[in-house]
Length: 128
Image 1: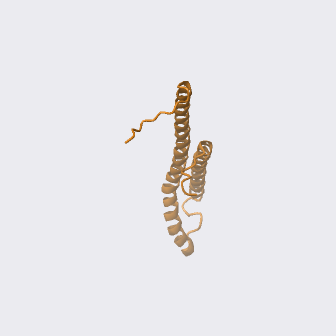
Image 2 (image 1 turned 90 degrees about the horizontal axis):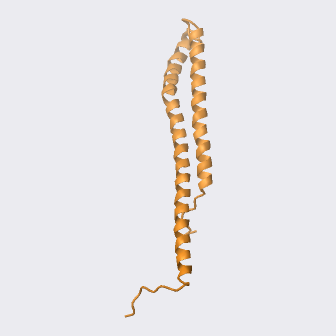
């Protein structure tokens, strides 16, 4: 609806931000395990690549090595970015809660001052 403004649930931001951070960390560990496994397979095969050295194996090797090298560069970066987004969502939630608490305190102070003044209406407008 128009005029509803932005509604933020700070606990959801903080919670889901933390989960996103964990996903980034888990993704980094999975990528590391993948590359360690691939390296072990390649090292165990000796001079002949694990997929063979016949014509089809050579073609596969060209494609595989390009993909492998690209993944080694991109997957850790992606993991870091996902975890970073999670931290930023968590920070947003904390900052939102802090802001809301400050605004609530201002409102409470204003209301108690108004009640202390006997609830009198203040009119700052002059009649013309």
